[in-house]
Image (cartoon, rainbow, N blue to C red; front, top):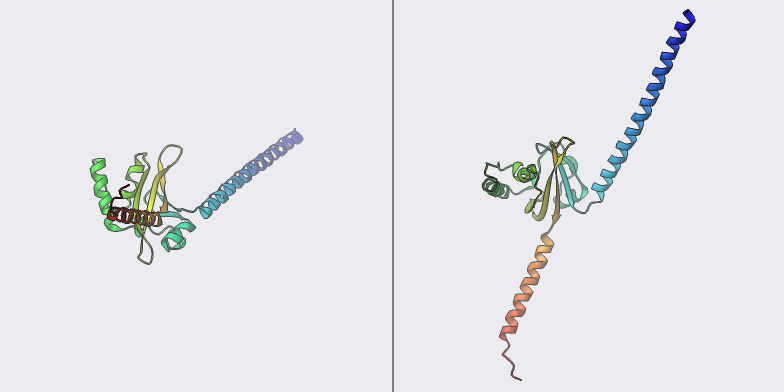
Length: 195
């Protein structure tokens, strides 16, 4: 009976060790999946041509990719965990957008981070033009798309903003418009030819 009790104790210890080993393998596999996902996200952010900034649900910057650094002149470490995207927005524009959204949504929208995310909180992506303010004070015209990030239960866990510099395109459109206007004026100055 004593040897049977000892064998039973030994069997339980072996089972615990096997279960621990299986759990350890599962943790290692999960860790590998998380590392692969993190590597993918890092590569995606690093290679994106557009500015990508993500925030917590209350607006604190979580990610600030290289394109955002180039577009705005800030280094990621100057903003991540410290500031809201409000820091690189024109405050008059933010106040104007908040007033427009307040009328559109039928409720007061504060002239702060809420002005960027009010629509996306309703499940509607918000795409609009904004003037970003570069660290050196220069204005940069962008097309900004803001979407809510939600967990499995549908709760908002943060936001992502993707901005494209459209200043050069707008300048080119203006140059084309000016050239067309000049051409039309020149054509009007030419007398009608009679054949």
